[in-house]
Length: 97
Image (cartoon, rainbow, N blue to C red; front, side, top):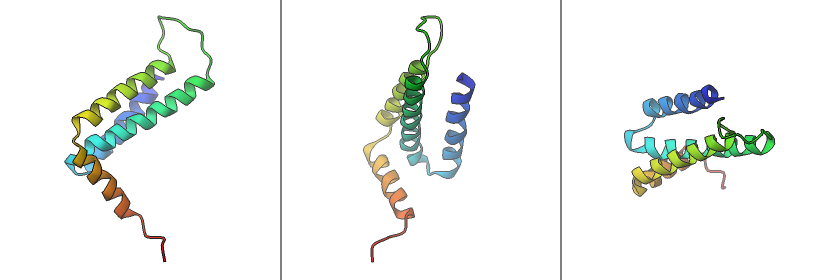
Protein backbone atom coordinates (compact mmCIF):
# COMPACT_ATOMS: atom_id res chain seq x y z
CA UNK A 1 0.00 0.00 0.00
CA UNK A 2 2.88 2.31 0.78
CA UNK A 3 4.35 1.67 -2.66
CA UNK A 4 1.04 2.46 -4.35
CA UNK A 5 0.64 5.79 -2.57
CA UNK A 6 4.29 6.62 -3.19
CA UNK A 7 3.80 6.11 -6.91
CA UNK A 8 0.53 8.04 -6.89
CA UNK A 9 2.38 10.95 -5.30
CA UNK A 10 5.70 10.82 -7.11
CA UNK A 11 4.46 10.47 -10.68
CA UNK A 12 2.09 13.50 -10.68
CA UNK A 13 4.68 15.51 -8.74
CA UNK A 14 7.33 14.75 -11.38
CA UNK A 15 4.89 15.72 -14.12
CA UNK A 16 4.07 18.96 -12.31
CA UNK A 17 7.78 19.84 -12.14
CA UNK A 18 8.12 19.40 -15.88
CA UNK A 19 4.79 20.77 -17.11
CA UNK A 20 4.04 23.69 -14.79
CA UNK A 21 5.85 26.92 -14.16
CA UNK A 22 8.02 26.82 -11.00
CA UNK A 23 5.76 29.13 -9.01
CA UNK A 24 2.75 26.85 -9.65
CA UNK A 25 4.32 23.60 -8.45
CA UNK A 26 3.62 24.02 -4.71
CA UNK A 27 -0.09 24.90 -5.09
CA UNK A 28 -0.57 22.01 -7.53
CA UNK A 29 1.28 19.62 -5.21
CA UNK A 30 -0.84 20.79 -2.28
CA UNK A 31 -4.06 20.12 -4.19
CA UNK A 32 -2.75 16.70 -5.25
CA UNK A 33 -2.01 15.73 -1.65
CA UNK A 34 -5.42 16.87 -0.41
CA UNK A 35 -7.09 14.76 -3.10
CA UNK A 36 -4.97 11.77 -2.13
CA UNK A 37 -5.88 12.33 1.52
CA UNK A 38 -9.55 12.28 0.56
CA UNK A 39 -9.08 8.97 -1.28
CA UNK A 40 -7.22 7.55 1.71
CA UNK A 41 -10.08 8.57 4.02
CA UNK A 42 -12.62 6.91 1.72
CA UNK A 43 -10.50 3.76 1.63
CA UNK A 44 -10.11 3.83 5.42
CA UNK A 45 -13.86 4.10 5.87
CA UNK A 46 -14.51 1.20 3.49
CA UNK A 47 -11.78 -1.06 4.88
CA UNK A 48 -12.28 -2.07 8.49
CA UNK A 49 -8.90 -3.26 9.68
CA UNK A 50 -8.17 -4.17 13.27
CA UNK A 51 -6.56 -1.38 15.23
CA UNK A 52 -2.94 -2.11 15.94
CA UNK A 53 -0.21 0.29 16.93
CA UNK A 54 2.35 -1.74 14.98
CA UNK A 55 0.80 -1.39 11.51
CA UNK A 56 0.27 1.58 9.24
CA UNK A 57 -3.39 2.16 8.49
CA UNK A 58 -5.13 4.18 5.82
CA UNK A 59 -5.85 6.80 8.48
CA UNK A 60 -2.09 7.27 8.89
CA UNK A 61 -1.74 7.83 5.15
CA UNK A 62 -4.62 10.32 5.16
CA UNK A 63 -3.06 12.25 8.03
CA UNK A 64 0.37 12.26 6.38
CA UNK A 65 -1.00 13.49 3.06
CA UNK A 66 -2.99 16.21 4.82
CA UNK A 67 0.03 17.33 6.85
CA UNK A 68 2.31 17.51 3.81
CA UNK A 69 -0.43 19.21 1.76
CA UNK A 70 -0.84 21.86 4.44
CA UNK A 71 2.93 22.39 4.53
CA UNK A 72 3.03 22.82 0.75
CA UNK A 73 0.13 25.29 0.96
CA UNK A 74 1.86 27.29 3.70
CA UNK A 75 5.19 27.39 1.88
CA UNK A 76 3.54 28.56 -1.33
CA UNK A 77 2.49 32.17 -1.50
CA UNK A 78 -1.17 33.17 -1.96
CA UNK A 79 -0.54 34.89 -5.27
CA UNK A 80 0.90 31.62 -6.59
CA UNK A 81 -2.30 29.79 -5.72
CA UNK A 82 -4.36 32.52 -7.36
CA UNK A 83 -2.17 32.27 -10.45
CA UNK A 84 -2.66 28.49 -10.50
CA UNK A 85 -6.44 28.82 -10.28
CA UNK A 86 -6.67 31.53 -12.94
CA UNK A 87 -4.42 29.56 -15.28
CA UNK A 88 -6.66 26.52 -14.89
CA UNK A 89 -9.71 28.69 -15.53
CA UNK A 90 -8.22 30.01 -18.76
CA UNK A 91 -7.85 26.51 -20.14
CA UNK A 92 -11.60 25.84 -20.09
CA UNK A 93 -13.66 27.16 -22.99
CA UNK A 94 -16.46 29.57 -22.25
CA UNK A 95 -19.82 27.84 -22.31
CA UNK A 96 -21.76 31.07 -22.06
CA UNK A 97 -23.42 32.40 -25.23
